[in-house]
Length: 140
Image (cartoon, helix red, strand yellow):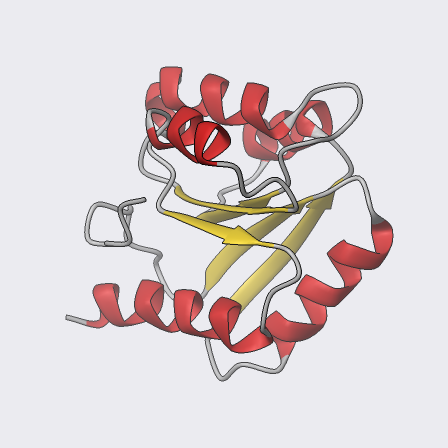
């Protein structure tokens, strides 16, 4: 995956994040890791599937999306596909956090402008480092 954040739309002050995962426990864990960082975070939105995520994206300004792939109702793959085809969402940073670490899955999402693919389970500092890169890219 491309790990550069230089093409992400610059947040005005703090960054708004969207966590998309059908597991409430995983959303809580990602939120906890985010809150432990010293990154200026505005609002953290949550969605249990891609359809809920689309509703958030339609209504809110989001700078980064952390999404699972395998979810009911609308998968993360479908969400990423729609984001890649929608002009107003093209510059949102996309991070996949999934148990599916297969080469095939990684290739599929690479074509959807995913910035980083993190395989579960993951170390909390990985999320911290992603957020730090995002904010540092816009401090320049």
